[in-house]
Length: 246
Ligand SMILES: [Zn+2]
Ligand SMILES: [Zn+2]
Image (cartoon, rainbow, N blue to C red; front, top):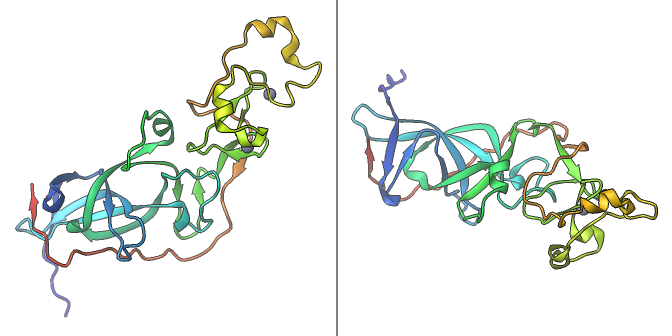
């Protein structure tokens, strides 16, 4: 006979003593994987509950995947702090939480003055069973037709408004930063648009990427279908950590 399940009660938040932090439902947290050579897992806490006496606090974690954990793997346009919000959930003991972090929208991430260790961004949701992304396409730029990687500097052509990687236009990043004006190969070809005086007057200092550029070209990011989702093994501290529920 199965033992009757003791009723658990939901909590709005809990205090994780060993890191001295209060975690609320909706917060993003870091959890250490069982294989500690891997980077910390990132999760959004969907729910917190405890036993009738407020002990044995558990959280429902919705996992963020790093690009290398996805079926398609890490691609050139993935940022170093990029995560995918997955449909993969697990219940974990609250004492496996090692810290808080922030997962920004793509737009707000590109506006950060400085990116801290605990700052990440997410522009895709990820189906962990099929490997499909939502949205399933992403705008592309430059001669290389690549999506925007916020880790990389780009310069904007003042005529056609497309964005270019310095390396793709045979320039170093340092050279690109020193540009006063920039016209891509197509726009600076003889008889090109830029030679008309009306346009010349409107020339502005070449923009170095500070916002998400617009594009009308897209890359489809979904790969075929596939594999079963992989189980996440979480590091559990050997000494039980006492938890104070609020
Ligand atoms: Zn390029
Ligand atoms: Zn151009």
